[in-house]
Every structure is written in structure tokens, then in C-alpha cells.
Length: 233
Image 1: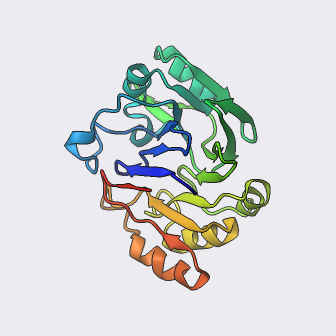
Image 2: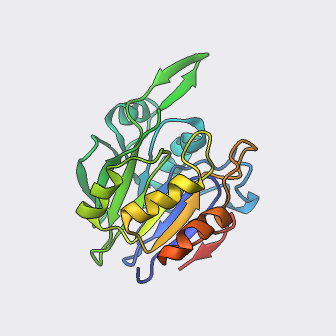
């Protein structure tokens, strides 16, 4: 994709700059994220925040980032209500399969096989379904941010409906799919490139980009394995 800039801040937090200059933040987790470099613990500029689900390692800094940037946050409906109770403004609650026009971008919420919750006052509060997102940029090309998910067959429908060229896929295993399933997901999605995420942050997340690369290389799929804090265009 022309002039798409991708900065990884560790785990599932990215700052993606579109060809039109719009800044998209995914699942902001900075302060408590051991993989996030100290100089990147704060985000001051963003147009859109994509929030895939409620777990702490995806929402840890959502309130701070939303307030400091004034960005529009997209989340599944129940999670959006929780955000509003926290005082977050400019929130769009969505349902799986829905599409919103935000900042000149077309953003569609996709399924994900995972759970979504936060713990408050020693009580688990469930926050609707986990989700992913397909973003169509200003040049009418698309990328897919899967969020936390297992492999599921309807990824073929995401390919048919949206034809994403890049997929951001979890590869750590244990809580999400590992490299083997992510490789199959990449093939089902028919993408040109995979950006691996959600690995290495905790010891239990054992999947590695080199394992994914070995599995997708025969199919001509590129793996963009960034280091935390690194930016690639």
C-alpha cells in the first residue's frame, strides 16, 4: 500500500498513518506494556482509535490516549458504553459487520474468536464480543487488524468482501492463534503481507515471527516483523 506508515509499540499497539495522513491507533497499551519503549509511552496525536476488546493489555491506556488526542474511538457497543462511563468522548459503538465512515476512512467491524472483559473491584465485567477491523484508506485499499482471535473459516469472507492487502495477526499462541494458524489465516485472507503482533510480551506467548515467515514464504506472503518503536513504510 502506497505511503502506509506502520509503527509498532509492542503487543497489539500500533500507530498506522494512512496515505492521507490520518493516524490510527490500535489497542493502546503503553504504561504497563513491558515491550513498549520508554520514549513511546505517550501518544499525543491520533485521529482514530480502534479498540478490539476490553482486556487490560488492549485498553490499559485507552482513556489517556482518547483524552489527549481527541480521536474518535470505535468499539463494539457494550465496550463503547463502558468507555463513555469512564468519561471518554467521541466514541462510536458498533456491531459485528457494521461499517462507519470516520476521518475519511471506511471502517468495518469483523468477528474475532476471543472474549472481552475488564476486572473492576475484583469482579469480572463482560464487555460484549471481541472484534477485528478492516480499514479502507483514502486510496481505496484495505488492511485488516484482527485483534485477539483464533483462526476461523469466515476469514475467507473477509477476503472476498474486503480484499485486504495487509493483515495484522496475533501469533503468540495460548490466548490467540499461533504461527501455524496465523499462516493459514494469511492464506485464507489472500494478503500480500502479514504484520505479526501479540507475541513475546509474556513468557506464555511463545510464537515467533520466524516461524510464521517459514510457513508463509512458499506462498509468496511477506512478513513485516517490527521491533517495538520501529516504523516501516
